[in-house]
Image 1 (tube, rainbow, N blue to C red):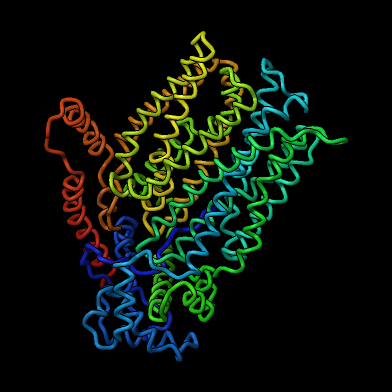
Image 2: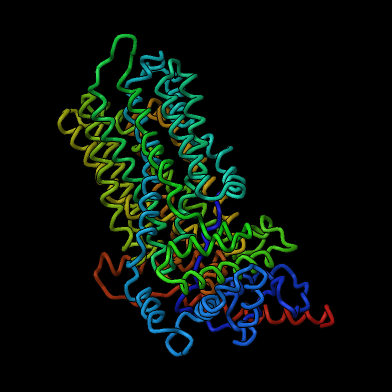
Length: 640
């Protein structure tokens, strides 16, 4: 089960000036009577409390809390740094006017904003390790693409006209994702809980290494299916742990970019796997070994995992995980490795502590799974997340990632040329993922999806309908053009958007459950797509199979237009307002964007755009009045 992508440092430049009561920790001498508000009223205030639990606490009380915290945690030798850190955690600009901060403190804290990419070597080493782990993920997915044009015949399941053989090939290819959707994704929480982030990464990468080597030694399709199924135990928890680990170690100004690199370097791993397929294809069998080329393809995907295993213990453990285990001194030491100064480390240490305390307070007496679907704000976020995760699979990208070699073979390529053409797809998929670091926050998540889905549909139709071309050169050119253009449009849209969107759409107090829901959705439909494609293309022919996913791209465009809300650049409070808009109102807003887009992009007029923030503001005013009445009634019933 994926863990929550949480902050390790307080948000800067917060737009809301709401003052909230600080959830009282165990070390506070004074306690506030807890009111039993109804579920709607309690859920409405959760994000306000979790956005910064220190907001609104008087200076004297904050300093007293820090002193008690230092005494209870055995950290009185760090009390001056902790006091500075708590002040910066409460107000990220206070160092400019408080005399407690030295000139060196001010310089470091200022450069944290003005030179956000100036970070410690240890942090960047951690990023390299995380990127390599993502590349493992991509290679796991890519090497089967080349191997499947070789091993089916050797295992007696290579008849292109057999439905049985098509289903068996699909089952073998999809085996890891069946494991991810049904078992391994749900092991993420216990693995992280008991072993921590680094050991979980080590365990999963070692599983990936061993099962990839195991795959290279199989001699029946049943044996290969079992080996690849166990590969899923390495893929699922790793895909959920590494982005969270990166987020928990990264400073706030660059956290989003570093977390999104998971998708970018997964694309790099796919390209690297395609390159290995092209190289190893020409390796001949040796005496006593049949199919050495495809065996090396499958086994090679484990090598990056072994490299990660050898270096993961040289990077810091997640400070948040250490704090959750009460290991505050260790957490501070790891933060000192990740930050330039003790003040930064103390700030993040104390902020993580109060945030964890606030989360624990929020989770008391709540059924978070039920509230994810019964509270409209949460339900709308879940629906939108399901749409973008489902869309990442049913836009058809993994049909190409897993089966491009077979597709190119069917269009008229030789085996070697098919593998080389798959490599071009992998490279394009990676190169056009690089600009997404900037475009996702420039154009917005929703706009990228609305622009790229119709383009992907056209590209799939070009690739599919090209199979009707009688000339081999024309057919090969048409199929290649459609697939390559598809990669160009997919990489900045449905590539990076889903995981970024889901990580911010859910309220903080249910984000771990929401991400589990979203990730399991993604892996399940990944399995469905990969197991059904061989049979689908046999039944509908390439033209119909590609048209099937082109139609889904059109359906997904409608679903995004009506039900997916924009999250770019919004605070937690603003996200609450946007997702609180009822479905009918937002769908009507989406429909009104159709004539607006026609006038702007077809007629080249300058119509006035309707801002979703206006609808959110109206909803916010109404809900605020209702919320105030609910809270007043609950307090009166509680005789407070």
